Length: 609
Ligand SMILES: Cc1ncc(C[n+]2csc(CCOP(=O)(O)OP(=O)(O)O)c2C)c(N)n1
Image (cartoon, rainbow, N blue to C red; front, side, top):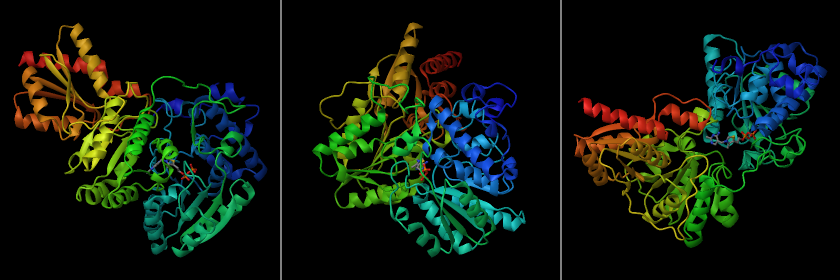
């Protein structure tokens, strides 16, 4: 298991758990659980005590280090009751997304590790098969649980393994298209798939659509051929244990409707579960954030949302679409200014894109604000419904590049590779928020499919020109001229390339620096010019090297200036683990020092040739 001892329990050792919570005192029952099999021998009053202690512990950890929060608090009783009722790990519990599994992690050997969750030496924020024998399916993206659980149930029947398989899905996760597809298939197959529908009325924001209305779950389950059980109060442990026993003993597809309260047991989170879906560290007594980051540059997300609102002020055709991420994409800011021009479609990235295509057919200028990692879901919709028809749909890919603590399920490492091959599409990446606003205006104006990728975190804090103005599509910018080597960078890596050029200058090496601006179409003329002036081009990107920006640079130079030496810096061909984003950049070799070192190596190679 990654993270070794730090991610697991260390019974007998005085870890932070002792210090903060008084292990042998207040949380005695929790301290005794190193394996969830122990729950099956416990009395109901002991399980109720365990639920109280687990909740206390989750609040302690959340207050100290932050993380996904309200979903796990709401699932405390459910987590305990599932492990107490089913023979895990022989029986399979397949959690959707995994952000609500902090309690599951605590009960399955990661109690001490929870203090290091999402850190490089701690457990992942979501689920990983390699982390625990109780993590039956890796997750992070929504809507996979029912499909995977159905596969496991069918496999168990075929192999005679005698496993019970339970998918645990929230009302938010259930809005994803894949969940509908899987439930439809499961009803048809008639196999003994068990679904726990964890209904708290919330996705991150309030859940979208008919399933969340009264009677919606029941009617839907019955229509698809499921046996419907419940609804049951998900915080009444006794009732929950009884209901889960009925689910366990059911044959054929069965769904248990569990009603929970997101943030249960921590008043501020109950009162505002939207804000408490995930949190930064806070004061345990009041819920007040410990560090308030006032001042400083805005996040890229805020810069995008504000730029979009400004463009929309002047252009009534502009509308915005989010797939269940109004906060994460900043569209809640946009919606405040233009409430009737913002659509939350639920966790439905595919639908978001084709819905946008329809809007564009009728003359609107939709912008889909979707994280790079989640837009992976909608590749065919981008190709078939948008690009092939050359429709003016904009894509704002937030969280493009490495994201740090959320890890490989959430890195935006592949968008250039999956978008670059698509005809008609323009792809841009800003180096700062001023360029972002100009690129957004360019995209809206150009009347073509247009993708804008920008990273997680704070923007550099550039001053904004008063008016966004369209840029020349496919034109890069030469930021600095030098005759020894050319650093050709995209988006967030541009400032690093400039810093690398400074470092190289101190060592007597003159570097050109190009902000490519567009990954498609590339500025071939500029590339050839700097390539021929220096003889050596180094591409830099916060994206997979395979098929990304550097590959595009290489293709152009191989054709037009084959004597130019090209080195490509970007993410290696393996998944990058969760942890600190600066450390991830260093490991990938795209920080300023690594760029400078790569330039020196390339020049050394050239001298040896
Ligand atoms: C494909 C995809 N899109 C968006 C997200 C972001 N996301 C993470 S949790 C979440 C809400 C899930 O709601 P629900 O399943 O009801 O769980 P709850 O937090 O309410 O317990 C969303 C939209 C995601 N993980 N995957």
